Length: 483
View 1 (tube, helix red, strand yellow):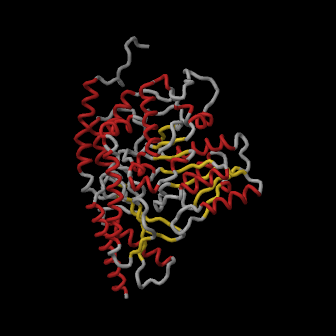
View 2: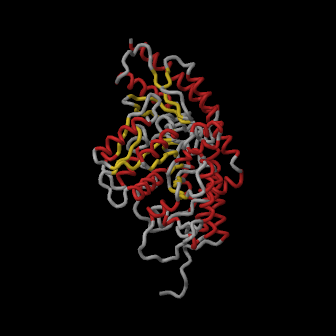
View 3: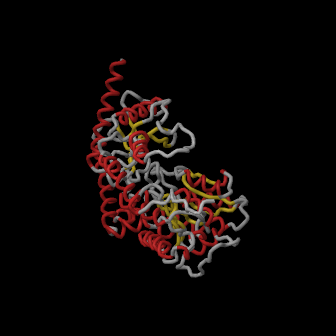
């Protein structure tokens, strides 16, 4: 063995600065071009991405070449999710303050799973979670953790509810939600050890909301049949329709029936910052647990989710282990060991990407941006109403707009009309200025628009309306020519 220490992986401060400065022009060019690039660019069938078809590298490649591969060969394909025309799925936005925070976090590389390892960053994350609880009006006993997203948060909520109400005997445990609740809840139940039949997906009402009376009736029937109802899943902004379930009434059902109330507010929760959102989300403060996705309606980058649990000791009891430990744990409730409140042991410090932009700007710009999205959605609804034969499936409670084309010549509401709507979606997306998606809602194909990115403004929604109008005219002309 050589006496000389290996230094190949060590960067001097000058080299580190050089790496950053070399990447910045390409990154700036990429960001400056977001508006001009197509909202979606599918990879052609059979095409292999250059630079990815080789084996494990044994020789070095220049940094400049790797940056070229990333920006010019890999990134041009797929959805431009950071762009203003991205109106599909749930736009993330990704404010750049968080990118700076992530650079700092990765370079500092502190472990926050145990409070003693980095008290400052652990307390910082705990502070962020207290802010979230304050936004929703939850009590000071609330604890939680920042997760990779809503799926992990929903999973831990199920684990906490299971541990608190069922103990170690899971047989007969039953959960209740609507037929348009997010599929991650079903997956969470499955991963928590329950069969699919343990989840009652109850029919939503005419406004696509979970009906409290249906829940109460089903719970009582199941209990009489020997099952063990324990979990009520409410949605505060479903991904399909943006629907907010009647949270106050569902909280009352949960109290009466001794159920854990979990609110999946991954999309809608941060609208509580706005006056309109607070009104729509009345009752969320009574939840036993709430899932939030700052990477949705707080405009942070993908990979930022959160779980809040009303009683922090319940969350800790569900995730705490008593095996061999390599570092001391904290007894005081304000000194949180996140490894004992979540499924993860090794994890990055996630708090800085939330804390930095909120401290830099305060909450007001975030509130104003959410208000803008609500106003833009109503503007969009008014413009869509001017397009003949387009109908709204429901009046959007938040910023998801669901619509269906129903031309006069197509009397059926079945497969033929679904096919026409698929054609319409493809024609709009082919123009490249915006990206919409289609979803199946109660067996029928509908178009869906989500107004959420902090970069999306009236100009992009005007493009969506113009492209819908043009696509409708093209499809009508195509039919007339065929006749």
